[in-house]
Image (cartoon, rainbow over all chains, first blue to last red; front, side, top):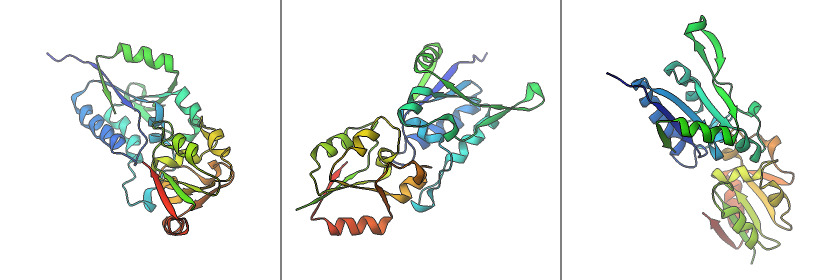
Amino acid sequence: MSVTKKFMYLNRRPPYGTIYAWESLEVVLIGAAFEQDVSLAFLDDGVYQIIKGQDTSGIDMKNFSPTYSALGDYEVTKLYVERESLEERGLTVDDLMPLTWEDEAEDWAEKDSIQLISRAELAKLMDEQDVLFSF
Amino acid sequence: MSILHTVNKSPFEKSSLQSCIAHASEGSALLLYEDGVYAATKGTSVSDLVAGVAGVKLYVLGPDLKARGMQEERLIDGVTVVDYTGFVDLAAEYDKVVAWV
């Protein structure tokens, strides 16, 4: 008998300067195979991971930002972005990549994966999880 | 004996930028690179601190900005974008380099 658990991945680091962001994405993609109830949270510098227009051609590193667009295909459809973290960095949701998923139950209707939430709402969501992974 | 200060850490995660600015004298320069480039953008919780630095020339490494999707329009007024060659030129131009890692 399999039990579905609520898994949340906390992303707190910017991309490229350290390996945390890329490692988190790898673990999320591997974990997606286990068919759990998965969500990702982007807070603190983690909001920089999903900024649009990333171009790493000048720094000889792989631009892994397009991979976030593939998360919907792995049934990872809940990407929570903390509003206060954006504001503290002079950013808005318009600075983020448009990330969507297709809902099979509604004739593959395209839906937004990103949900803007407050710090207090994220704290509440964290309480509701069975497992939290922090990167 | 003027100093080139470099900061490569996010100002929201470490105190490198704050400490660097507190120790930077008039006539020195500050180059932001890697995760330090976020400090060069407008509207953040540290942009007043960066914009208010007096007598210190501000530089940011272009390839690191571009990698992170930070367009030049986002930069605080007065920040100069340099490439890797410009980084080397700055290191040669100043007497000493202090890396706030």
